[in-house]
Image 1 (cartoon, rainbow, N blue to C red):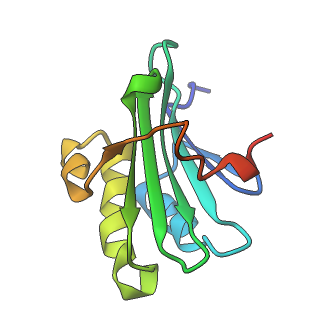
Image 2 (cartoon, rainbow, N blue to C red):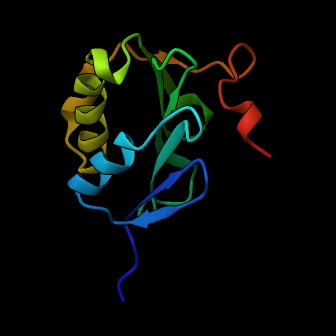
Length: 128
């Protein structure tokens, strides 16, 4: 069996290797206040840092999207001020699918800001 290139993991630890676009959309659609985040991780990149995109639901169902492509200097985040029902999914789904398939247009979909670990720790309560 060939090695996976992409892995998706949700908050409860369920994983999917090399999911289709339809599977990614279903996994995203399953996010709720009990399962708030998902991580898309590239497994086929050099081991010189982390390469992922993750989404987290806030209490008001707006979202934070974060990506990293290598070391700490390549770590960014963006706010999606709309819940999925109010149009947030129209922003987030193309970002997820574009990132997963390496289409560059996803970068222009959100106003990315460098993630500052000293100032922001949106997922700290979920990490061990």
